[in-house]
Amino acid sequence: MSGTRTEEIQRLSEQVLMPNYRRAPVAFARGEGVRLFDLEGRVYLDFVGGIAVSALGHAHPRLTAAIQAQAARLLHVSNLYLIPEQVRLARWLTARSGLDRAFFCNSGAEANEAAIKLARRWAHAQGGGRHEILVAEGAFHGRTLAALAATPVAKYQEGFAPLPTGFRAVPFNDPGALADAVGEQTCAILLEPVQGESGVRPATPEFLAAARRLADAHGLLLIFDEVQTGIGRTGALFAFQAYGITPDVITLAMGLGGGVPIGAVLARAEVAEVLQPGTHGSTFGGNPLACAAALAVVEAVEQDGLAARAATTGVALAEGLRELGRRVGGITTVRGRGLLVAADLDREAAPVVDGCRDHGLLVNGVQPRTLRFAPPLIVREEEVREALAILGEVLAPPAEGGEG
Image 1 (cartoon, helix red, strand yellow):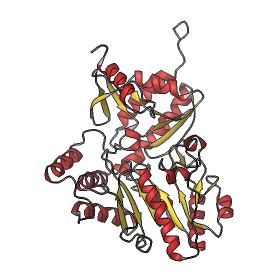
Image 2 (cartoon, helix red, strand yellow; image 1 turned 45 degrees about the vertical axis):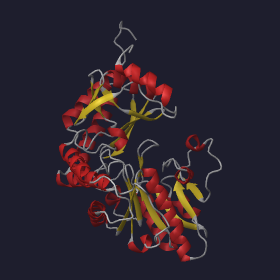
Image 3 (cartoon, rainbow, N blue to C red; image 1 turned 30 degrees about the vertical axis):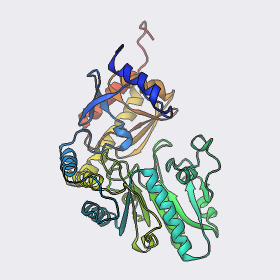
Image 4 (tube, helix red, strand yellow; image 1 turned 45 degrees about the horizontal axis):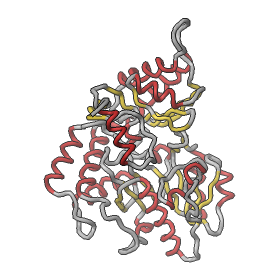
């Protein structure tokens, strides 16, 4: 084998994997807490968190033990049978969300797909043929065809026409435009409380309050996509709780399983009732392993106070980024909720991402000039300071006389 182990993995990846990902030239052997270790033993602070997935960090003892114990008992039986682990997780989620019923799948896109089907089926049960779902410009709801149709961003949709119809986009955070868009065919409003992929853009309280009022006034379902924001990420267990608004349906995924694939849809009982046997399903969804892992994650988040910790540590991260911008330059705007934070730059993000990785920090360029930070919820303030110091080195202009 020639070259490093990472170089060999990169060469083989290019031979056997489809080229739909732009992968960084690094491969990891193991993780511990907020740190990852590559195949050559280099250490990295992980402020990507598997794209807001690794809520408990890497190799968390509680999650590891839950997975090991469940794998030793039972991995999968299918939804032809009762699944005790699924019931326990559903009871936990419904009790804390204020919603009544749960459906489990394998990803955020699947959760949103299920929510779209639920809205259409619910409208069908009401009669009148309503089917249109209002979505917000800049949203990202997934890459299945229906979820993609609900994602009104040209770069994601290009080349996949014809997409399913029945979605109308309105400007994000514009209550008036949302009200104007409601029509005779509208059955639901689908929104992210914080838009993640467009650069961590929180909804205003006025926008979500308007969505709730419109849904109530016109008999629509209000669906919140909490795939990225749920399970403590924004400083509350669910992002909607900070707004004082309860939706009719929410979707979850990323942080729910701590790295084990699982998605969920939570809904009011009378809405959930329309999904009778044969209307929707998932072969792997909610299997014993995934549900045991997710239950370990949510219990740790609650018992260890990780949502509140995300709120305080997130403030330290956001304030540190603003101070770094004032002192070093390069950062123009900082936004976020809890440990979902974005920093707009005065330069292209890609070289900054590469420079941070070279210095042992993993961050994500979510937009051409925007960095996203979504570290594990267990991150400590000293690790935040360490990450900020690395970012400062990368952003700082070269010393006079030094090499550029």
